[in-house]
Length: 270
Image 1 (cartoon, rainbow, N blue to C red):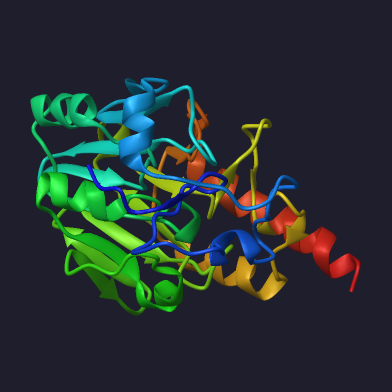
Image 2 (spheres, one colour):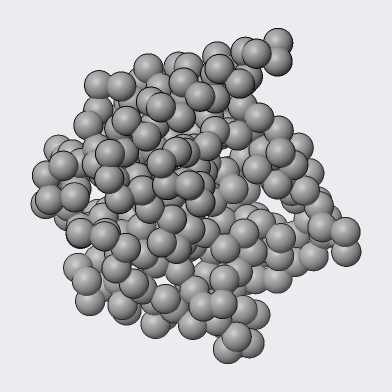
């Protein structure tokens, strides 16, 4: 595993030593009170403080992460589609044991990431499984470690397989992306949303934010466009960024209902 520097706060891996982490310095994230601190995958592995966590999250969807959590703490999702295993989002921690577990499940055909906070060690993942990483070009500036495995795409949609489609909603980041799997939930459809459509404790609704830790709401025009883009797609479940953060039923209506509520509150304050 690489010794390239990683931010302890957000997990972003950079191509070489630096004093600043642009992801943390952006208003959507934050520099911890203790200041910017650094580590690398080799150090994390040698510490033996982290163990791979691979756990089913739903039909044909396997959560992938570490115990305890590292940095922001998101877990990735392995989609066991008919076209092959596809990794949605990226967990910052990776070691040989985790590579072996995913290999036992059939490996990967590709990776796509919802937004820059989860870019983390994407190059390590791409190299470990010899697959491309799909990122929206609107977030190109946030790539901390350029690599030929990174494939930039543009526009509103990209089919990464016959049965998997990326949609650029633009929430949270300009390139904020979700993944639609029509065959998910036994044919009723699944939406994998990261932080772009945020699964919240009240599973009858979802959230839309520009910054989650700093509580900056997303612009109404962006939320309206996101709801319009998702309207034609059918999905029963919504899989968020955290362990067991899943809307299990009526996902399409949950999104549309939540957008209507958000816009009603946002426009009332203008």
